[in-house]
Length: 29
Image 1 (cartoon, rainbow, N blue to C red):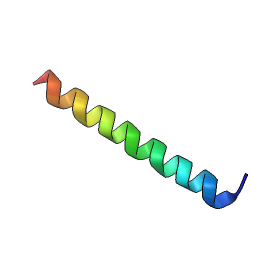
Image 2: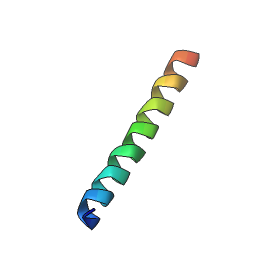
Image 3: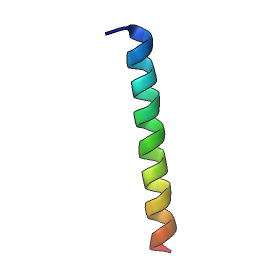
Image 4: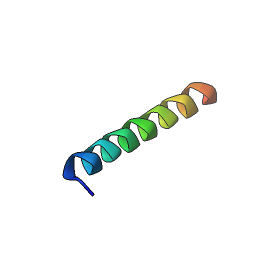
C-alpha cells in the first residue's frame, strides 16, 4: 500500500471515531 493511502485511512478513521463519540455524548444528555 501507498504511504499516502495509509495516512488518509488513518485520518478518516480518527475523524469517524471523533464523530461517533460526539453523537454518543449528544444523545446521552
